[in-house]
Amino acid sequence: MTAEIIIACLAFVGGGIIASLVCNELLLRFSQSLGIRNKNDVVVRWANESKPSLGGVAFFIAFVFGAIAYSIVFQNENIFHNKEFVGLMAAGVLAFVMGLSDDAYNTKPLVKLVVQISCGVILVYTNTIIPLSGIFWVDGMITVIWVVGIMNSLNMLDNMDGITGTTVLFILFSCLASDIILFDWNMNIWTLTLCIQIGAILGFLRFNINPSKLFMGDAGSQFIGLFAAFFSIHDLWTVGVKTQLNPLVGMAIVLIAFTPAAVDTFTVVINRLKKGQSPMVGGKDHTTHHLVYAGLNDKQVWLVFLLIAFLSTIITILAIIFAKWGNPWMGVFLTLYFFVVFFILYRNTIIHKR
Image 1 (cartoon, helix red, strand yellow):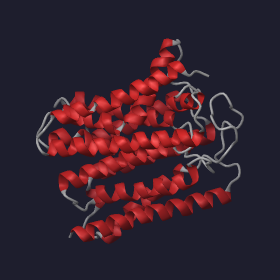
Image 2 (cartoon, one colour; image 1 turned 180 degrees about the horizontal axis):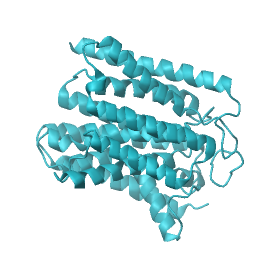
Image 3 (cartoon, helix red, strand yellow; image 1 turned 135 degrees about the horizontal axis):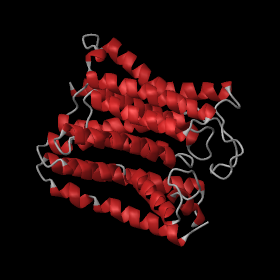
Image 4 (cartoon, rainbow, N blue to C red; image 1 turned 90 degrees about the vertical axis):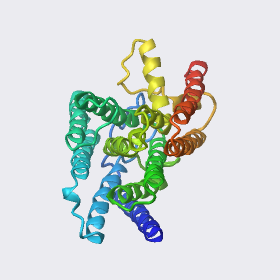
């Protein structure tokens, strides 16, 4: 049975890679200008040349392809009877359409916020909820805030070649590892959906690592943000409950897994508030930018974030294993990793300014 599960997972990862490669290659050939926005906005955008912002289309296509493939292979299971999956699909469609509209028309921030809140409400309504307090309306509000926060955080992090794609890739690896560790390779819609999206991101990075040929755009960052938020709730926030430990264990594990994105978001928010600026306005003051100001090139910055994301996943896996063994304190202790990374990158923004 384990061999069959591994083969199925590899097949879905491979399918995601192929779908992403083909989709992105066709989009590059199809368009030299479609999806290019903020063409002359050198104040906000880091890249000094315009490129198609259509890479996120492949994420959505891979997701749909995966749902269809799963329905064909496992005909005895109707995925549309799965309330959580229907919620993921509905919220995912909403996030993707909103992001695609933003790529084309620069949607107003209030509209984006309303859509993001709606995505969170859909997840709560379909029983995807962070089990923190045990009080439904409190946990529901926390879930909505989490979804909005992650969608915006990953959108903000999408400021340099390969950074967001790599960060989300390792977050999803952490979610997949949680599935494997806690449920011993149980082949289901969640495992295989994760696999195909991991494949889609790997295929996208072929075009997005510096020097990139295309960006994921808001269609990508909003959809993949919603996707990461969902699976972090499904596989990481719930670790404390699944192992019959304190729910705060899940919070600690999530903080570790999201270290690259969380550190960047907290750093930008703190620095902008100190200057009396809005945290929601774009700019070249992210941790990635300050690493360039410190003397690194774009490719080296990506390698730094690749290392941080890789270590985040390794430490997350260790925390999950200890939680499975009944040790709730190791996960809390391992959050020191987050604070060490935050201290280093935040300090760098103070020392090396533009």
